Length: 173
Image (cartoon, rainbow, N blue to C red; front, top):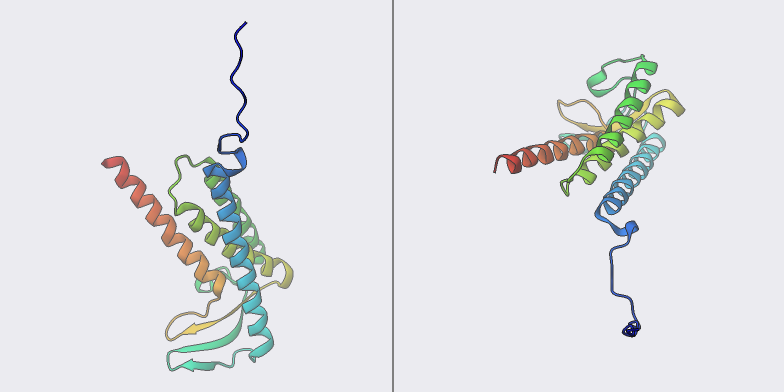
């Protein structure tokens, strides 16, 4: 009967399921979403407690802090139709997570993009459910007042477009 070689003192490093790229991408998505939610909620709290509603505080000639209440979505659409906005937001959030879970061969920017989209949408959805509106407070001349969640959503959409365009280019090449 042949003898087996002695077992090494230290096992060779093997990727564990918890550290597979898929798991790390999910962790990145969740961390980015949580940071987005916390940053958005903290800044909205500061705006509500520090600035008189609808009384702009000038930071720069073209930039103001203006505490406003928004019952609609982007550019005031669906104003005072909270049930439509809440259901639409919840469906969009579910779709993002399903899309991320089903996407194979993910682009490295995808968890960042979806994390920003999810965090921004979830933070605004939380406000709509708990307060019946969203606090907007960032105002740039000639542009509707917005908040950090809106910035995250916009950045997430841009990131998602970049991943889709670069994925399409990779298929062509």
